[in-house]
Length: 110
Image (cartoon, rainbow, N blue to C red; front, side, top):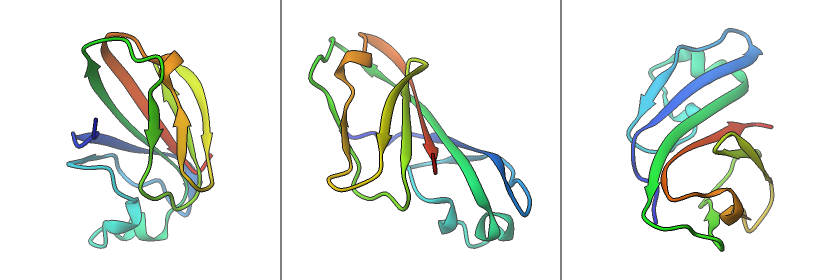
């Protein structure tokens, strides 16, 4: 399953100023928004949020990232699933998944 759906990006604590929230077509680092000077100079915490549907329970589901620029705290169904910070950039999240719509959050950096 590839999570290529819209994501909400909100910014939490950081400097020099907190950028405005963004809706993204795909997961990407906030430094990609070159037209927005506030994201280019921001250093702090960004939270990426989306949801997806599972048709059946997935006990052995591994979440894999192509790249990470820092670290990511993974939160599924409001539960802290752990931190991804080094190669191979993956984490087993099956025990946090339930059949149906799942809220999914990533916090960068942790």
